[in-house]
Image (cartoon, each protein chain N blue to C red):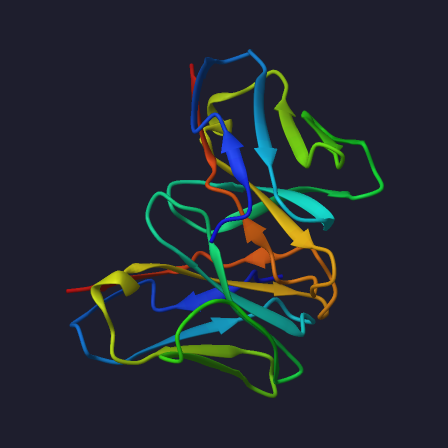
Length: 113
Length: 113
């Protein structure tokens, strides 16, 4: 079975632009979470979605938004990009909302110039 | 903000030696997990230990949890060059959903052949 997939792999954007990152969970997994990992640090939780509803939100500004589709795939949107948004964005899926073990995708490396 | 702190930040050992990494956290937890990350790619789940467990084994991995000290340790026995990676502890705080993990800063392990 395929693991969690994310697209694109790398992305370069300019300050002020908008970006959309995509994630497809493992087949059968209904929960998707997004994490931001700045270089040299551990991942930080951004969002969790389950059954197309937001189930949790981390300490991130409203410029960050996400959604989950009927096939359980998900998008993370970031508006008005700042240099500090440069990071590895990780998507993780799990079987259900309360299932603790997370399966991570390879991430999308976003560089904001 | 990061809940956990890993110690040491970096560890360099020879193949065949044991590697021990420590993690401390601040709040009550439901469980604690360890993940491995190779070269800024996606994270791989290694092991999960619940708050009512004190020790858990998986292959060459041994994890201990001391909830009174809010600390955990990960022991990798008979290390191999392929174990070279960053290792993160992640906690699922009590009262939160399963997917909202709080990661530490990580330990960079280098195993020299």
